[in-house]
Every structure is written in C-alpha cells, then in structure tokens.
Length: 491
Image (cartoon, rainbow, N blue to C red):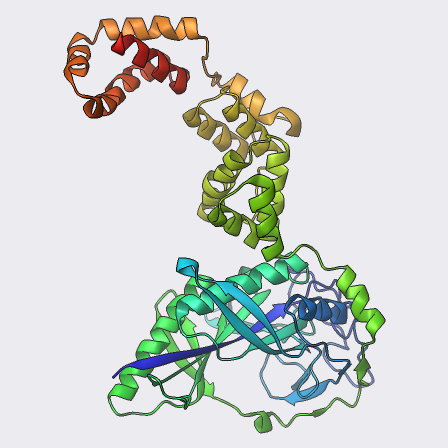
C-alpha cells in the first residue's frame, strides 16, 4: 500500500535575553548547577513574577519576520504537570492568546523547488530545568540522577507549524531555514548542542490521496538536523510496518536515540485538558500597542533571503554559494570580513565554504569560537590571489593560523609565509631555468608528448608538473610553470 507522510514541527527557541522571563536571574549557559535559580523561578511562596519586556520584543520580531499576525493582547496560563525538572509543578505559558498568530516561511528545496510552510502560532513560555542522568555517581560508583534548575525560567518561544511537510527533506529544510531566521534576528543563538533550539516532530501516515489524517506521534527534543532526518525515517518505517500488519498507531510521545538509531515510547500523548490549563492568577494580560510593534520592526536586521539576494548581486556569487553563506548569520559576517581584507569574493567564498567550514565541522567548533578571524583568512586569500603563495602552501598557512601561529592580527599570514619559506617563486627567469633542467632529464616523455594528439597532450602535461614542483621545492608558480612548459614543449 502507498502512504502519504504528514509532518508538523514544534520548535522551542530559547530567547537570548540576559535574564529570565519572570525574574532577574541570569540565563548564561555553563554555570554551576542550581546557582542561577531564584525564589521566583522556583515559585516559592510570597514571590510574584514580573514579565521580561525584552522577551516580548524578541517574540514580536520573530512574528514580523515570518509575516505573522501579532497578538495585541497575550495572556499567560498555567499548564499543570509533574516532572522532577519542573520545580513549580506547572509551566507558565500561553494557550488561547499567544503573542504570535498565523504566518508562513518559504523554504527552498532541491531541484529549484520551493514550499510554503504555514506557522500556526508562536507563544511565549518558560523553560524547565534539566535532568542529568549520565554524569553523576555516588560513592559506590552507582549512577544517579541530578536536577539542574539553572535553565528553569529561561524564556522560550514555542513555534508550532501546520502539518505542511511531507518528507524528511522538507522538514529538515524548514528547520534549517528557521535556525537561520532566529539566529539572524539575534533573538536566539541557535546553538542546538546546548539546547538553545530544540525540535519536536509530529508524524502521521495516511493512505495516498486520502483527506483524513492518521494518528500522529511526537518525537521530542531532536537537537541536530542529522538526527531529525534519521528520526523521521525511523518513525515513518515503524508506523508503516504497524499499519501494513493490520495494527493501529497509538498517539504518544517518543524519544529517539540517534547514536543507536532507536526510538522508545516516553508516554501516551496528553491532550490539552489533561494539563488543566487555567489563566495565571499572578500575571495580568499584556497589551501590545502599535508603537511597541514598530519599535521592534526598526530592530529587524537583514534577513537570510535578502542577504542571499545581496550576496548574488554585490559579490557576483552563484545561487548555491550565496545560499550557503547567507543561511548562517555568523558565517555571513565572517565571509564579509574576509572579503574586506582580500577583495576577491569568489576565492573568499571558496575558502570560507571549503577549508574553513570543513575545519569547523572536524573540530566541532562554531564560527564564534573559531581560532582564525576573517581578517586573517582574508589576508591569506589575498596572498593566494596575488600569487605570493601556492594553493598547497596556503593550506599550510591555514593550518598554522588555526593553531595560533603567526603573530599579530594584521600580518599573521605574511609572517607564516615568511617563517616557513612558503613564498611562491614567480620570477619567470628562475622558473625557465628550472624547466630547462627538468626537461633535460626527460627526453622520452618529451618525445611521447610531441608525437601525441592534442587531447592526449593535455593528459601528459601532468607528468611534467610533478618533477617541476619537486625541483622548485613546491614554491614554483604552477600557472607560470604551465605557460613556460607549454611554450617549450610546443616549440
């Protein structure tokens, strides 16, 4: 039997405020456990929450960026549930009156296709604490579970899509676009490894062409695009096996282990009435006026789609390169810093998307933590462009820069080129002497070249370049070597 896949996402984006949504506690990541949870965050008796204005501003900025309606009157509710990492026994959130209403995001797909994914709404809420299962042991070496409440009260927007996606490709493309959007806005750092952006995936199957949706499951807390793609494939296959064996899907929440490619049931899926929502008695409705919305609109930066269009026009980049560079706000800024120091946009794009990005991935680093700056890479690219250093020599310079060698920011690449003797020989007289010496020892290859047709000659040229680069200790300019070699061989 053939099936249609139906996917909707719920995305939790931690807002980049300095303090929590209802208290003055810090939201900084990495503090000692339970050092940033105040009496307000724990709902201790006698405390009252005070809304964080910046959280509202960030939520409105998101709403404007996704072409959404802004809720002029937003109301906080209490969502009651009992988990160890929920110190209050409830979560302060928004149900019927969210701050962001319906909107949409247009997503580019492979093959020049595009898809519009509708946003149902986005609401403000507080994050819970965090249960630590694997890093705590008692004096007997037995594993323990600890609760870190530092995250409790951190402001979130939960973004809920319509079930508009029909494949893992579409869901991942949307997730990447949303990551690009919130990080470009500056409202979320987008660091999925730290839980700043977390995805819940709702998946159901229905007979192909049917208008009736199937029973859905929710796979929670996916914190990488790769795991999201794997989790969707795994859950689709699981549901398909059950349905084709005559079984039925149970509405439930599931957890996915990407390292093992396994999923397990977490709990049966609650409905809204199971949470016993009621308006929060400690918080009045928040009314947003036109002036507040316009003040948020003024803060909107250049968004990814606009940045892509500018990169194509300003730097004459391909659609592909412009897409990759514009999706990540930090990578975009790094690229433009690089270009400003070398004036060769295409070569800069090649190095930023190539060597630099590959090294970030290999070392599991971010652009913000990279040990090389745009200025340093820009100087290196400039030296490649003016033939000071060869491409192989440039990779050695890059490695040294990454390891912190080379001295000051302004002359790091030049210092390494000088110190390691990597300056490329572009003196045509010196190169001609090397070519003559090498050719004198290759009479058979010369004869073979001269007897070959044009097509074969192009292949045979490579046999001369190796000895030439070896003779020049890797410092000969390959382009000039090729020109001199062709002239002498064809003479």
